[in-house]
Length: 518
Ligand code: BGC
Image (cartoon, rainbow, N blue to C red; front, side, top):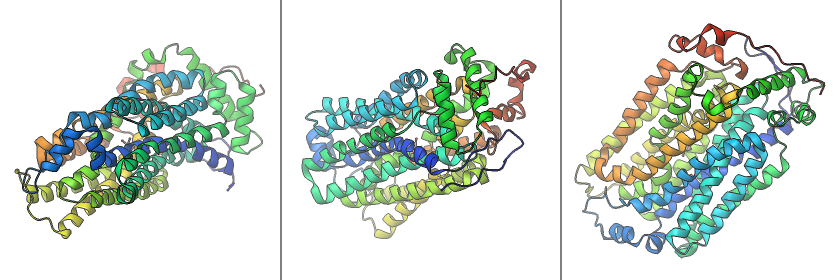
């Protein structure tokens, strides 16, 4: 696994370091934190399409769904706020906990926060698997949400800090890869359990199965060390240097170590990151910390992730065919993520954003036309042919692939690489919180949107995709190949954002005392 020391990629600073088995395994273990988020994203849609689950907990929805005849309006058969609250409550909990987790990652380190996420997630899985009423379901969902908030706050930062500089983009995207693996495992489980197990046992195993990804991140983080940056932040200089030597597998890490110490000293001067982040000089990046997660959700991807089985049922598929089609979208989502992992550092962020956006837009228009032609305004499709159903699934898959190599992974990568260290953790908290708010909103309003907007549902998201693509085209500077410590220069040189920087900001800070020999 170990390779040679890497060559400079830009005019900026370069640190020696190798692509070693140790750093690879460290990142893989940490990235498994994405599994818990993905498992949850994938499991709830399948469970809420299981008749027996609806009968047990949401009998009104079940009665309404099963009394709808094929000749009736199909758009509204799942419209229930309480059912969507089951899916979306988790994201509110994750939003709250990510704010707490930003304090925990700074005070206690990244690793303990990851461990906490595993414990909370496993506890939520137990409560959900044993649920006897809706209250238990919601309490379980809240615990899962607290776990996800902790993981989404700590894992991306940990990956960026541990990965060698040159591979930061690809390693950061491992988080998204594990999200997609989690979604796929959940889709697979839903399909297998609904088809071959059935009854109460099916949904109990689907929900209780969340204990496995919870234990994986818990056990995985037991074997990890904290990141060198986090050790320095807490004053453990010797330990940090030792860790850095082991991770980079070179004889001398003084330059990188000194820079980490310098960044940490500078960060300590900023007393309150939460107040500072609203200063004018961070405004350009702040706009992106807010807009990128918001737009990521407004692509409409989670309509597919949460509700693909419901959507497929709506357009006339049987229960098993719906779960099977969701499985196919899950496989496409995971495989397409590799495209971005292998190209992001060559093509750059902007190109992937724009290519993925165009692909999603075209598919959204085609899907809208297909649904409009068949269902019209009445929501009564008549007979649905296999060719029609196959074509809809195919375009949904191409749409999913477009998301998977653009807004999916980039939605986590870009906000994590554009901020200077002194406000990075607060910025990550904003990123996670905005992501969770919009995930909540989409999850909560989807069935009502489908009921009221009918085939126009995807048009709404298509309009958003156009707006976000123009936003990226005009306002996002390319961050490919720019060392994180020099990132401010790309904003300072951008025709639109340069006015936010004054001369004082350009002054080079005095380097703190050299403590590489600590
Ligand atoms: C998003 C999730 C989405 C997933 C799909 C993630 O980047 O944050 O909301 O469900 O990608 O793969």
